[in-house]
Image 1: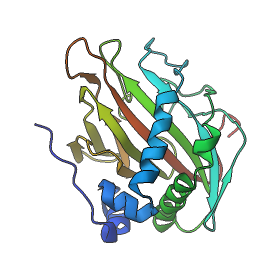
Image 2: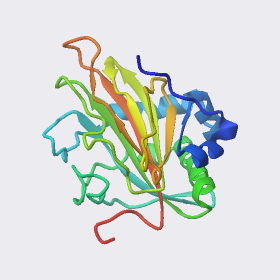
Image 3: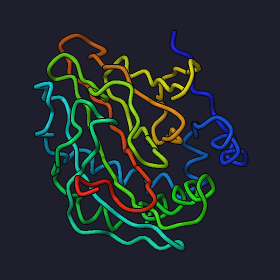
Image 4: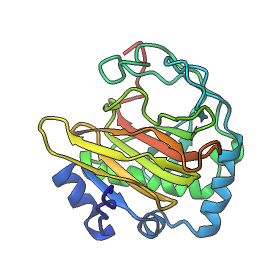
Length: 246
């Protein structure tokens, strides 16, 4: 049986990230950190019903839907950026690296939601606690991985790093699926942890320089009945967005 996530008390979050390179917040801790309510998360969660297919999957799959948005956060101010491609070097993503991937933009109501802005500011604060106060370049990826084809792969690239400073994986919800075990490994040693995020709006925070991560495939809980796993992945990077231009 997969262990439960090792939850981190909110008052020790920054210290745990500094010491271990990762931390898990339950939904209540994330809500307190970002000053969001149940009404806020319910409003945001509705946007996952309108995610278009990912047209860039190189494994031939049709199990992933997503959108993409870019922001900067500095001095507690969030600024939306214009459309830009998502790009990663092959060193971090052997499957999809080295190509510019254009995705449908975030719905304007999502990108401009005040609760979403509070979430970005609160998590940018954790990046600053980890690396020092600076301007953060943020990419937001709402994902839906489904099992309509029998199996869905949250991380088809396998265990990886993202080439950023802080990665945050928010579990928005799971419906009718099994699997989806999260695995976090020390990037420079054998230590690792495995657990399954199951509570809606709980979150995994990762120091991308210190750990690699992956999530195992999901399958239908009931054979023949499709299910899905919804997440919000946020990446925080100092110095600029990753791009083919360097």
